[in-house]
Length: 244
Image 1 (cartoon, rainbow, N blue to C red):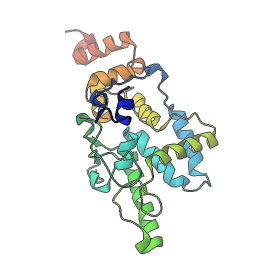
Image 2 (image 1 turned 30 degrees about the vertical axis):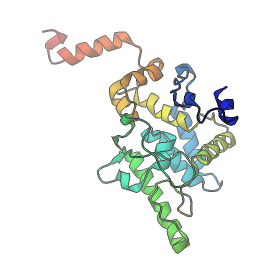
Image 3 (image 1 turned 180 degrees about the horizontal axis):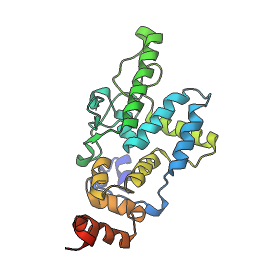
């Protein structure tokens, strides 16, 4: 009604547009994520694929599953955000639309610095090498945009095209398509197997650990007997026979 009133000239603006909409939480049981064997199969198939730019898109996927970044964070990542020697990466911006315009991180907690694994560092070095090769071929025609994920001409890909390409590759390889956000879930579910929830929450950039718990409670280790033994071992393992 208010939208129609604006169109009819009865009012200057729709006040309802200023009302924040409630966020819809997805059913955590329906979250899609790859198993480790699916990650390895994808990597092996893409490494020997003759599809155009398969090597580049393989590196994009590796970066996603080794860092847990959101799609917009991946698309907005710049070399100035990365310390390869110190093995850290800082989220300062997101890129949600075509072009080079960026915006702030999703939430206050989304702006963060995370440590990088050796695998992630190797992936980033390979991405930088690809850029060096493309620049040597194109010369002045190569655009130095500063982004980590760029096509052969130096321009960053449309975030939506990243999704479309990943879907096509999964379909071509006969793999379950988890979505790019599913790669973030793949990282999270794997990380939670051996790390405390608050640590994983900080890496993911969740504004509150309750978000992590609400999303991934169903994949947290549930062996309470083992948990009790772990506590006892931690407290009393130095004592003979586990007793004081």
